[in-house]
Length: 190
Image 1 (cartoon, rainbow, N blue to C red):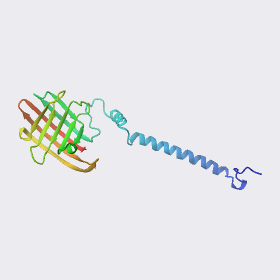
Image 2: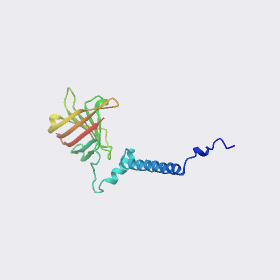
Image 3: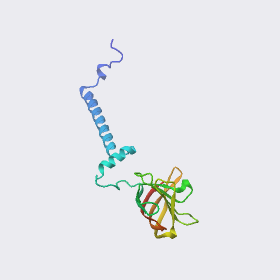
Image 4: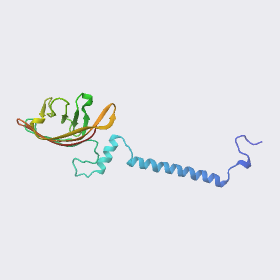
């Protein structure tokens, strides 16, 4: 009597069938490895890996690359009472969670630099700048600006209950000895 786990001779696969199964397994495994490899090169990656890939793809002589733009892009330069510094804006956050219509800006490479652009429904539009390494702020009202081209609009996207903002801000303002110039593009600020 044959063992119950063995197939009868009539049901035993032919040599061609066995080879086809082996070849099919090899093809499936190879295809899966190719797909995973491609995904690893161009697919979604964790932030630290995205930064590494970004640094690798960016020319080494470009100090402030614009390869990936999601948030803020541009500069905010201060001189006078608030200190002499330039912020390369890289992140923006909608003011909705903090109960104002506008955006908060920051520089990923220098966390001491921060600013807010506020466009209230009632009141005066203004830019507030955090003085680096202090808890003081300088606020520039729209009337103190020789150039004020600020257009911040709601995007159609809602993320965690916060409507994303997009737009641009170009301004040049003075208050006493303090002077600020901004040229910013905003996208997906949430």
